[in-house]
Length: 461
Image 1 (tube, rainbow, N blue to C red):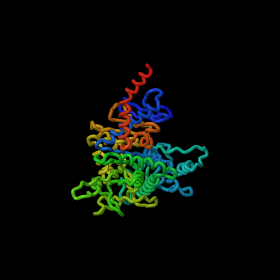
Image 2: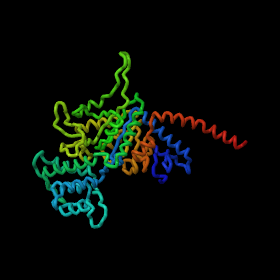
Image 3: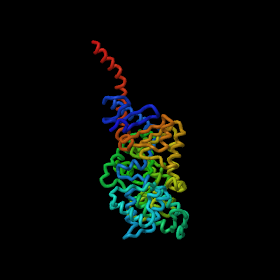
Image 4: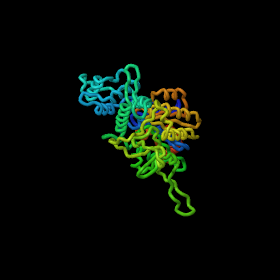
C-alpha cells in the first residue's frame, strides 16, 4: 500500500496517513509507537464528535458495496442482463424493453445505448459473453436512477389508463401508458432484486454494519439517539440491528401490519421504575432510522383511516408484484415533497441544523442535489461538523469543500480509511474502551518529556 492510499484531513492542516502497519502522521519513517499514537489521537477526536448533542450518519450506495451492492451511477450489468432476459424471446424484443433503452439514451447514455431490435439483440450477445470480440461488456453510461426518472416523466404526461405519447427527435418516442407501466415495473423490480443484500459470498460484509451499530450504542445515554439516514434501498441496517438486538425507530408502527405513521419518530423506549418513587431508565439499544429514498420493503397501498399515507412495510418478496416505493430522485423533485419523503427529509434537515450537530457521510457521492442542499444549509451553522468518508472523493461538492479549508470539514479517503469497513475498524471508537485509551494516552504524553530527560541524564552519566 502506498503512503497516500488512505488519509484523513482535518480542515487544511492536520493530516494522518495509513501505511503498511496502522496509522501515522506525515513524518518520515515513523515508528510503530508513533503510528499507534496517531491512531489513538484520531479515534479520540472522532470520539469527541460522537459525544456532541446531535450525531447523524448518512449512508450512500458505496456503503453497501462490500455486501454485493450495486453502484447506480451507470446501468448495472446485473440489472441490464435481467431486463434482457425478460424482454427478449426467440429473436423478438418486447416494446417495454425498447422504451427502457430509449430512456437510457435520453438520460445521458448517448450513442452507446442500443436502439432498435437488431442493436438490442446484439447487446444481448455482449451481455451473455457471446460477443465475437471477446471483450467484457461495459455498463451503459446512464445513471440508473436518471433512467427511471425519465420513464416517470414520460408516464406523468399520460392519464392513469390509456393514452399515447409521441415526441419528435432522434430517436423518436412513440409509447403507450401500458408500455411505460410495464417498463417501470420490470426496471423497478430488477433494481429491488439487486438490492436484496447481502449477495451469496458477500455475507461477511454485514459484520461491518453490526460493528457500526455496536459502537454507536456506546454513546452516553443522556444524549440524543443517533440518527441513521440512508439513501439505500437495501435492508443491511435492519439486518444488523436484528443481529445485535437493536430497536430501530423508523416511522412505522404495527406488528403484523406495519404502516407509516411519522409521529412515531418521536417515540422512545424506557424501563419502568422499580419503585413508585424511582426514576425510569432509558433503554440503551435504540437508534433512529430514516430511509430517505425508500426501501425494497416499502409498498404502496390505498390510503385508509388506519393507514393515512398508503405506505406499508413488508418483508421483501422478489416475486411480489405490489408497487414498490423506492424511487424519489432529484430529477423527479416533486415526488420528494410528498409523504413519506417530505417528512423524512424534514427530519434530516432538522437534525443537521441543530446546535452542536455532526454528520458522518459514508459512501455517498454527493450526486443528489436535494440532499446536498440540506448539507449546504447545515454548513451555515457555525457549530456543525461534516465528516466525509469516501475512497476517491471527486465530486465538485467535495472539491469546493476542500478549497474552503474549513476546520469543520473532515475528509477520510483512500482504499482503507475511505471505506465503511476501514472507517469502522480504524477510526470509529468504542466509547467505553476509548475512555480508557484517552486516559492512557494522556498519561503517556504527560510522562514523555520526563522520560526523554531521564534518557539524556543516563547518556551523560
